[in-house]
Length: 296
Image (cartoon, rainbow, N blue to C red):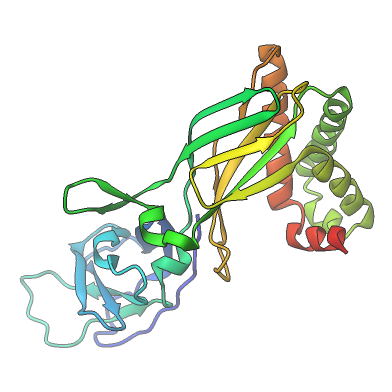
């Protein structure tokens, strides 16, 4: 979940405290505004200002420190600024402009986090792995009452990436086991920062990552890939918006594994391996740099 720090601007009645540590949090266009502190003796009111749209008020006279502003951001390509007003009770006359915290700009189309795709069906037959999945849904509805998906909004900007790997090669399993131990040691001892710049760590990571995972891309809701018919495969899917400058890749789907001639313990072991692998990839290493280093 993305958090963007905002700054405070003090205006009007300086006797009232102004909100601080304000953040935008947005997944699949469901957007929550959060801030501090909890008010005592006053209230908050949220104003949403669009560059071309009228100002909208949300969470009027609230004592909460968060506000669901999804309905105010329906024009998802619009750029918005939020004002968190500190106000006295409605029964008190106050003709001064209330103090407020003014946010950084937020554009839902460019900045909302892409949620997890839902795997609906998958089959491995002979040398083909077929996967069918569903687009994440947004809070916004069509006139008929059905929810819009992220594909309905992003259209041709939306792609999906499939990451998959063999789960029945003894060599791959041994590599996975070694990687599990290696990354567990890193995370438990908080060595991520030190190892991030270590050539040894980069080389180890490259070996395990590219030995275990392959990838494919689609603009549809299906994957059909050629695989080794003597092995089972595990996989997960992520949505991606290649045109974005930030937040290009979304949340990972659940990991699934095909089950031709495999025991339950085999599948559990390899899914656990992927979980550690995923954490290390995102938290311990500069993945974009390592990918570039490998391609060179």
